[in-house]
Length: 386
Ligand SMILES: *Cc1c(COP(=O)(O)O)cnc(C)c1O
Image 1 (tube, protein in one colour):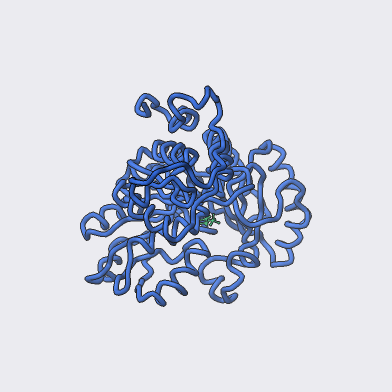
Image 2 (image 1 turned 135 degrees about the vertical axis):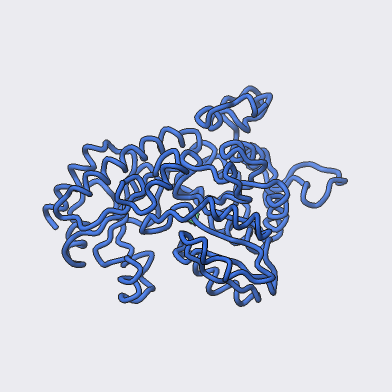
């Protein structure tokens, strides 16, 4: 049935919906039942029970999410971190080795540095934009290569095609955290990635009111990860499934608007006398601009910029904006601003931050769906006040 839906806008609405509709319901109902009648006989993982990720709400979401990235299979999880940790714990065991890009999402980086070594799993960091340097980091027990589509907070885009080729030629599982791009802008399984992970807390739900995650990709791997998730227990509650399902329907409208708005804002800031630097893959000045245009259908709603001046000027700017909310996280309908030096990267020393380009005046923006002209007017008045 799903193969009749050609475009992602249509898949968001119709893929995975129950056929026939449940009592004719136009919208997928919430099945708020922990367990379902059974006389036994099915395998453990098929007993209908919320923790086993197989209620009607889970099934509908799995089919819809797989369709969005043209993948074989998908699984929803209780958070983005549940998707990431459960996948890594499924694919790696004591003695194994894994390659990561260093500028990972904070929670992922913390898990890699603190938790993997305690389990006897070794890792190395690789520069995602220099494939020539990767082979020297390989070990006999290297099993996985893991990158992010767009890195936080400097919006770097690594050589994502080289990652797939490297994984295939060295028999590694390739994993990409595709949260920042969303399936509207990039569908990693189409490029050959084994697994694409999202924090659905961000663009996929889009309304800043739940935490959820997903793993999309090869059926055999997703099945193994589901079995691990069944045991670890990071399953998504049916009510949160419903909210994610509802949020997904407007994903294309939201992200296409956010792509457009972010590009206009990036251009405005790029020309602004109070701005030292803008990081956005859609700008010609971005080091991976050509690569981003080749791989992505849009460059996303996330950007960061450095103000001229000092930490004081950055604080004054944040105090002066009226529309964006000063908060971490991203991908919702409301614009958000954060200063990574004080939030996501607060645990890193000032020197190390300067070295990696996360200066005291760096501001990260998640562009919402407010009127672009109004956001630009607001940023302009706040920059004048900074
Ligand atoms: C937020 C985020 C995560 C973690 O997701 P949660 O839903 O908060 O657990 C992972 N990766 C990226 C890129 C994120 O932005």
